[in-house]
Amino acid sequence: MGKVLAVANQKGGVGKTTTCINLAASLVATKRHVLVIDLDPQGNATTGSGIDKHELEYSVLDVLTGQADLVDVIQISEHGGYQVLPSNRDLTAAEVVLLELENREKRLLHALQPVRDNYDYILIDCPPSLNMLTVNALVAADAVLIPMQCEYYALEGLTDLIGSIQRITANLNADLEIEGILRTMYDPRLSLTMDVSEQLKQHFGQKLFDTVIPRNVRLAESPSYGMPVLAYDKQSKGALAHLALAGELARRHRNKQRTATVL
Image 1 (cartoon, one colour):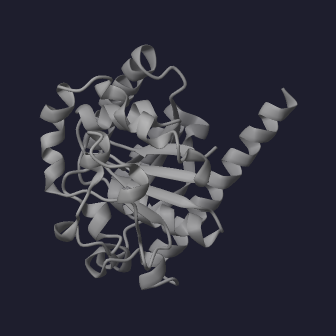
Image 2 (spheres, helix red, strand yellow; image 1 turned 30 degrees about the vertical axis):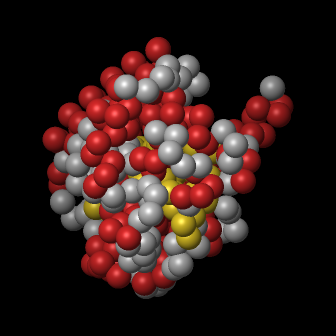
Image 3 (cartoon, helix red, strand yellow; image 1 turned 60 degrees about the vertical axis):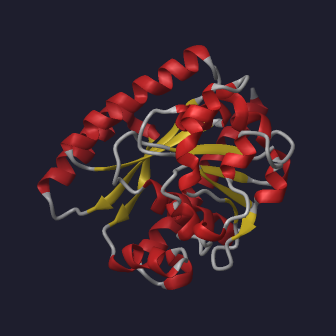
């Protein structure tokens, strides 16, 4: 069964979408089958994957409301090699529409059940707020991957997110856990970066990924060309960092499976 990861942070501008599409492409490069679900009405994971969000016949909103089957809405990222459940501005209506539906917190969970076995990883790009879309992502997910910048305001956002995860765990998804915290836009030349990084190590230990994603021009440029950085410039620091992240994530899951088998 595929591992479902919600890529989430209630603070915007921390690299959620960048992480989502570049991790997906890197996992594909290691022979994994990957689905990216764009749950942000901005549709950046859609356009960053080379899909025109303005030309969609169906989107993730149609899947959540039962107007279309997930398999009929999925598209392929030509340059990334992963599949995409796309979104656009129509998704802004989801908050109101979902409130009128039964099992509104579990619409994505139920939509994914028939296809989970088709993928090794399903990555959900969440909006930067705790709304009904994010709740759907957290209810459907096995774990949360949290990208964050090493700055003090980001620490405050992390505290809020962990509180939200705990509430979801208590009420809607008892198996939800934190997969790991990923340091993004990392610049070791800044003392603030190193100070916050050290705090994260002290508080989260092994939940903190060893891999860091550096500030990188090629990584920032690649979405405007509709491709992950691995396709845009595979030798760039941004591409190599996401390949390292994919490897670290895969090793974590192998080790967890071995431990479960032993127990």
